[in-house]
Image 1 (cartoon, rainbow, N blue to C red):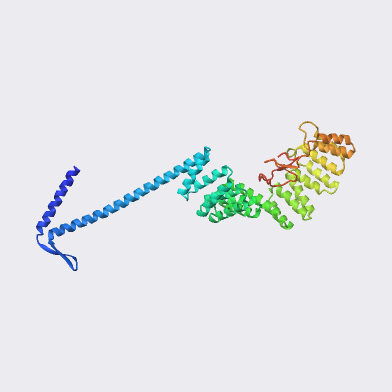
Image 2: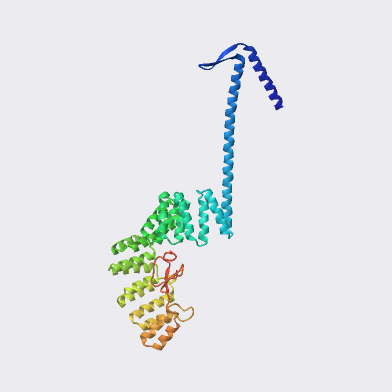
Length: 430
């Protein structure tokens, strides 16, 4: 049907051309240029002009169609190339995970070379070197990629992480600061840079970043946790101050809150004591002991108890603490230590007798019995008690990571837990 229509249209066009030529039999002058003219049949000239226009239109249509075909070919070629690179990247990662890093790295390197702006390929390649301990090669790859595409956040972040894994804190912080300048409101960057400052003990800068981070959070529970951590950072920044008055002022601003954490009150008392304000330190520690019974407070108060009446007051405070807040056996041990400081061995012995000897044996029990026997001149019994003691117990330990320490600290330097240190003889049940 279509072919018949085309034939009919062709016959009609031929008839139309012949009809035009028959209607215009005269010869005319046709000027192609001012000085150039031709003599021709008017009908034929009209037909020639129509055919020339049709040919021009066809040429333009063919050029447009050719351009579209070329662009479509180039797009298909680019897509095939992209799919091939994606396949190399996917296969390379699979080989690395399958335990064949050499072949996997070769494919990832090939994918990165063919698509240099591909952050994922170079990050995966660097990760494969990190997994085998080749940190220098991982850093080198990421460093080169960061120099080529210095604004890519994923590459910069991976480079900072590689520096941190290698223990190069300075370059790590430099990269993170560079990344923060590019993305000042990104929570991920703020957290990483904050942690870098914390590792470098740059507490004031870490606290400033934490305040910025809190402003970017929308989840209420997460914001609450970050505010609690902000208190920790302000606390550490206050402890880092070398000038006593400035340290006291910083810790007092944190202790204004009625729910101030115990490390703040302990350290505030330490700062007041270092500044010669012993009475104020005693008031702070006693107030803290009433609300949060802990051995560290008893030890602080015992250390500044210069007279027996001061230790009597401390024992009175211990008796007033609610029974469900304290470990009774450990309170007896603490009281025994206080009586030994007074030289009252009989009262110390009564406190130790109240503890008993049944299992489990509280820490320091045998040590204190040995001290009592030694003070009474009962050397054989003292030696026997020392022999039953299990060495010298750690004064304090972190309940999160079990790190031992001779002195109490409010912030564990190993696991970064807050208020996690407890005494070997801890009176608190929490």
